[in-house]
Amino acid sequence: MPSFNFLAKASHYCYPPGVNAANLTMNDIRGANAKIAHLRQGRIDNGLLKATRDDPGYQPQMPYTKKPLCNYSTWDTEKLAKSLLARGIKSRQQMKFMDKEDMVSALKNADKQPRFDRFTELPAECRNEIYRLALEDTKPRVRPAPPAISQVSRQLRSETLPLFFHMTTLTVVVTAEPAKPIALSHYFGDHKTEIAPRTRKYFNYARKAGWTKHMRNFQWRIMGASYSAKGRLEKPWNECYLVRFSTNMKNVETSARDRRSQARLDLIQAGMKKIADTENTKLTDADFKNMVAFFLATF
Image (cartoon, rainbow, N blue to C red; front, top):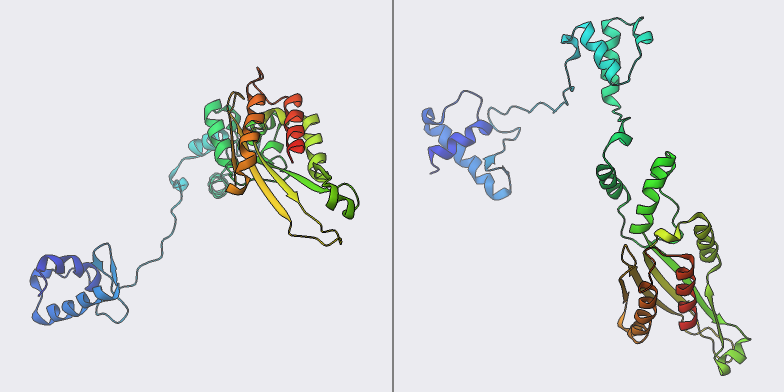
């Protein structure tokens, strides 16, 4: 038999309000035993039994409705006017033709569409934290466009673009194709390695716009294909390498997606370390060209 202490908790859900567990009859206790059996059927919430429509004394719960932020109806006209002015909803000239009911309606409509027009007055540290939350994305991107937040104003563009390119991993697609006719390439092994046209066009624009100096994370995707002497396409190959420079360009980390590329990984690590050992604190155009030339020469 369950304890009366437990029945006192269950009575809130299983019996109408005002029923005390200490005054329960045997029939009430038998009914409570049946409800306790529902514990094995998963009908439990925070240690309390949940009643159903078939249970005696079932009372449906009222749906939750969000309460307004303030009860503007109890405010006087002066307080409503000050609130409208402080929030920039209405001007003094507009409020000359408004009564109390119009002021209450204007404040309620403003609560449904909240705005914050003093974002630029926040400290720089707070704005940077908001930018990081808005721009956080760990997936590598191919030719990423500037984020929408950078198109709000010149100030936000100057603050968000460096952070965006610091955090974003940019994918550089490199293709390795036979430079000579297929039959000659098969015997002499001569391949033409170059950056994909769209990728090259994107980074040329990024250099002119001054974006490359903020870039720190690169994913080099090397895509190649081999052909037989008869001109048939053999299995294509694909290798990916990650290059991550530190904020001040003093350290660099390289990694490969698979261990099959480990033979070239040490060579890439040494080549990128020469770029990181320079006195430059940002990725200059010369550093970017050296990195591109190194990858094209390696493959």
